[in-house]
Image (cartoon, rainbow, N blue to C red):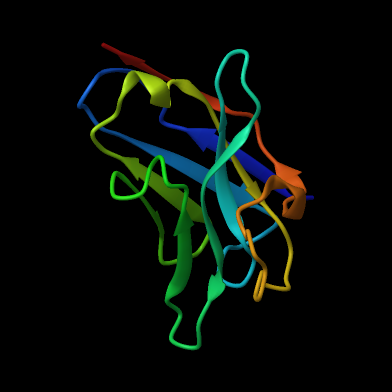
Length: 133
């Protein structure tokens, strides 16, 4: 059984930083794509970032939404069981519940939007991020 657990959310002032973690059981993120998504009150869920796969050198192919590019960064631990979302220069518009989601192999190659939620079917409970102005 695949389980994902996001953690690390909290309250932070604008301009601050937070790092979210997504711990997995039943799946690893070496070959299986994984993404971060968020949903703000009254808004649709949106993709934040994803690893669509890894190249032969084990470098993850990371993708970011335009709204977070340059401010957020994904990484994983050496066991590929935890992925992180380092968020810097947080703004009130980043306030949302953040979710991690994954899918099984194959990797998302040649896909126009590999971070689209339609490709991910393992979801964990979210973690709240609140950014005050």
